Image (cartoon, rainbow, N blue to C red; front, side, top):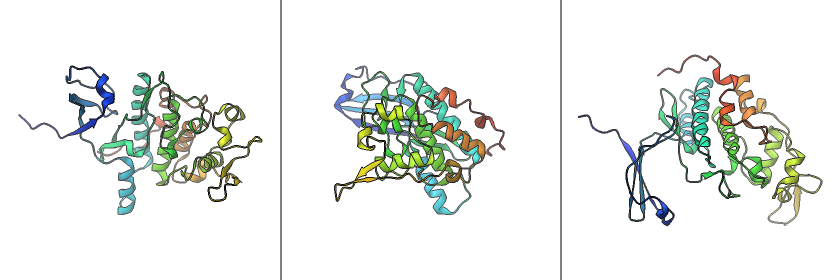
Length: 284
């Protein structure tokens, strides 16, 4: 009999898991191959033990290693296309369950195979159901959707925004929206993607924290306590993604629609024409 494959065991100690079923039995996760499924789970007193398949580096770590080692560029257009499809299929499955990931970022996408460019989405620690009372503080700041920053109601489309940010970062090696502060992040969104619609600003619970009554973007200087207006530096995704082809730029632009009502669902984004562009096959 061959030895069992390597696995990862996570131990979670939390009283919040007391409302789980008391049978402590094993279960097999159902879902797409792009989702890091649970092999088995059990309870031991206040500990929740989760056994998952063993994966490799996350995209942030691997991208950093790839750049610093001076090796051949890994995140080529064909690989970015493959990663896009895999992540969208994982999100499509998750969203179909009524769940929002709420913390999609390079650290939460792990590599299963370097040669075949197989990745898996992980970490539901911040996830929530769309029917829950939604927390106002979700998503890592550089990947946070505009509607979350402004305090608007949000849904699963915040994950689509995060994916757009991730793909741009993998293409260039640089974070698309630096997270110095929420106000400067909004300035970069406006400068790169375009203005935020007046209707969104009018309805945002937290709009007043970043915009004056005449919709001028500002932030408060922590040292002087004075308000300072921010003038977004006008640029474009085309300028920020010089290594990307036009199809890729169109796709990322599609995901980074500022108005969530116009932003695609995962099931819609996966049908974008760039995802079917016939690049040369990824060599295994």
